Image 1 (cartoon, rainbow, N blue to C red):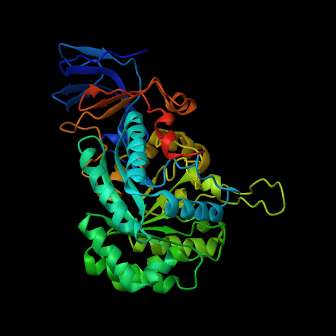
Image 2: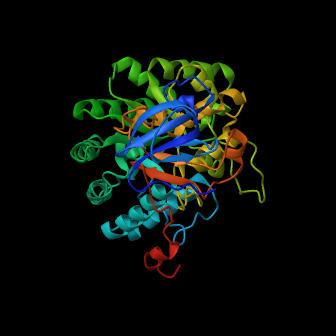
Length: 437
């Protein structure tokens, strides 16, 4: 089934199945059968199925329609380096060292720009309209990559709304002069202050430094926290403590938070309550966490014992804002992926078990849409409503199990009411950057 969209941009999508959760009722898991009127790139009306009148009617026969996606946590600067720099053992430390070596050897502006543009074309073809990317800030990379990011943000304006996060390691955050220099460049680029911290004795100082400098420069915070299987990892709790103690008023996001799921119930409940009170949003990266966590090859062949993801269902039930995202793409931290936010939703249902109760499953479409957009503060809201841009993804699926059972590579993506070319760029475009590999 291939839908034909009238070229004049004025039409009605009849018998469209749209989750009520993406049309304004965030708590509803129901699918509503509606007629969607599109004119001049906007959704102009939503009416019960069979009631809308228009010169051009496209019968979707109950097919599901979602708003184009929001991918709130990615790494566009690392993407697609796997052919030249693989992870030697699949571990988090193996990934960290491999990326460090590749960054020092190869991350000139032209290299980062080419790979970043390739990744954005993939995301756009899959149906993504907004992306937040973390960007490595180890000097001198903070000067190189912010320039590239600003170029890409301007180039992709109107197609993908971009946000950037300056990503620092704990040693950099503890070094106040370097931290301030990075914050100054981040502020100039309209970015967010970020970092990575797991099981470190310095965590309280790290969080204090980060919040102090973020407040000084008026920046929001987006931190990689506890990307670790160690139940003693306490970055998330230290972050929540620091926010509560200082009264920091900016947006605060914590990504990964893997160790929360291996802590005892008393500890986990205490941390979740602090996170809620501190208004920290939590982002799970299900595919990357599944790939990296609990991978230990020191004693030979070994099967992982846990899925690596955080307590996302418990966090949401406690009133914490949550979302899911792609994370890395074809680099040492994750060998796979294509910045397809629908793949994240599909795999997230399997990995995180948010598919039951099934009558609430469609609320999770907001985790790669409206909830992610609100957490990050994107202009794009990822909702389907009168007056909103007709940025839509049409699927050949009529219910949850049909939607989740296939990758839907034949999906139709509409941007401002018009179908786009969903042909993906060929990997060979990057061959010259990969050298002998």
